[in-house]
Amino acid sequence: MASSDRLVRSLEVDLAAARTVLRDVFGYSSFRAPQDQIVESVLAGRDCFVLMPTGAGKSLCFQIPAIVRPGTGIVVSPLISLMKDQVDALKQNGVRAAFFNSSLSHPEANRVLGDLQSGQLDLLYVSPERLMIQEFQRHLAGISVACVAIDEAHCVSQWGHDFRPEYVQLGNLRAKFPSIPFIALTATADAQTRKDILMRLQLQDPRIFVSGFDRPNIRYTVVQKSRPIHQLESFVRSKSNEPGIVYCLSRRRVEEVAEHLVESGFRAAAYHAGLGAGDRARIQESFQKDDIQIVVATVAFGMGIDKPNVRYVVHYDLPWNVESYYQETGRAGRDGLPSEALMLYSPGDIRIVRKLIEAGENAEQNQIELKKLSSIIAFAEADTCRRRKLLAYFGEGSTEDCGNCDVCLDSPTSYDATEDARTVLLTIYHLKQRFGIKHVVDVVRGTPTDRVGQFGHDRMELFGAGKNTSVEQWMALLRQLLQRGYLLQDEANFNALKLTPLTRPLLRDGATLILPTPRVRVRTERKKKKGGGPADYDDSLFERLRSLRRKIAEEEGVPPYVVFGDQTLKGMAASKPRTREALLEVSGVGSRKLERYGERFLSVIKEP
Image (cartoon, rainbow, N blue to C red; front, side):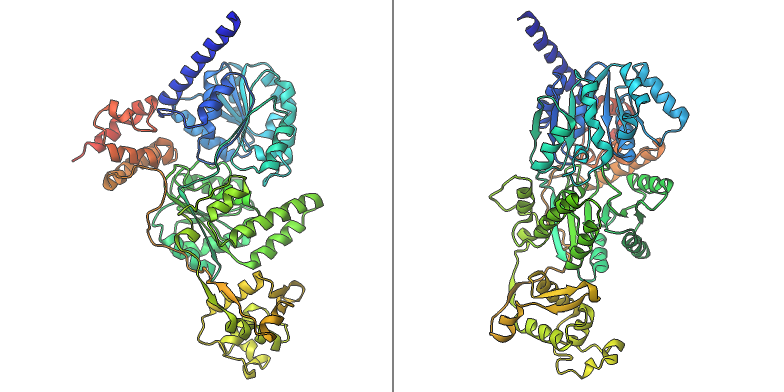
């Protein structure tokens, strides 16, 4: 009993220390649920599995126990960028943190290992490749380890959306540190992936925490592609100078879109794996410091990016699966403030993604990916609340519409498409089903192109039958006919349009066709959005505080959000604290930052 009492008292002391660290180091007055339960479990020596949305505070769940428990917390992280961002932010808060990966020079690596051996580190971030090297594990064998955190744990699972073979070896760690608490964390994992993570990492009787997947501050919108580069430009122009990420499927598309945005006057840059490491690092740093407004990227960019004030994420092309979409859109609004996720969608994207998947050498993995592709297609084509559909995929049911997606904000309408459909289907028939979408639209609209004249299609009876309908409307109709199986594209024959048996009732039996009105316009109105942040703050003061933050960030060579996040600045602009004590009450202001920056921010707040 006495031993049990001592353990309880010891845990109570640790929990008190954890709350002190939360307040004084990170500047938060209380834990969010279930952060407190997770921290308590790790402090008690329990293994944990944590599934928590991006921006919900996963990092604190292992950072605080690592600071409170004796020894160094080892954090396994898949990307160098993630390590650098988190270590920079921790150092600003006075935490003894470092990273160990291939970006370090030999002297730098030796210095980190020296600090590790001498007990000078609270946290060490390490790549999985470096962690599993025998020499590095010998260094670990000689130190006290506080806990082991495996971030982005879905990478360990073949069912995960970002499977990484080097993560598989991490299961061997459990046997090497049998008495040390392990914590596996991820923002996206369906039931199969969760089960696989627990098995592969060999977690011992873990406590499992699955938080809600909802990100109410993000507005989800899907529109059909119609001159997509102009749709994109219209959208980002409505965002003023707010930072955003645009994802594309290929390096070539990334380069083209970035070039167009730059020519249109935006501070944009392309980012993909084909660039040199130095260029990628420079672009990422410029984005973190707000020198670049928009990064146009393949999925090589973003995992673990800590930039909290990304206000929008655009998928210029269809993502491969719901998990990727959810994680990538989760890079918007990490600070809880209103943000947007826009997807531009077309059936052509489906064919491209399917080809990429089928080109894979692992047949079993290909089948998994094709199944996941079907789910993201269903999401893109949904005519009911998108958030409900997204949450249902992860097993989180909801009976109420969200009120913050395109379907909820602008209820779908329908129209009688019978006559237009018959016109375009008959045109395809008389063209002998040998031509693609663009040529069919040119004929229907009566556009006298060289190709139309070359084949004599300007003499067809149906030439110009739809001249009063726009190109965009005809393209949208053809996409819907493809989606609903009235047409197929012959990939082996230049994507020529082919009629299917479904057209017979429409062309011969007098059937009617009612279709939803295509969504091709990107909404740019400034409607009130759901999300966190003070409801009423002084916008002019907020801008002055942002200017001061940027000046300090430039002086110290760190991203602005490392000084204070937008959420914290808006808190200052709302409460307008006049004393150090009052400033300390603003969420995100800890003792360390109060000492470093307090007087400068108070002086701006006190300005008349």
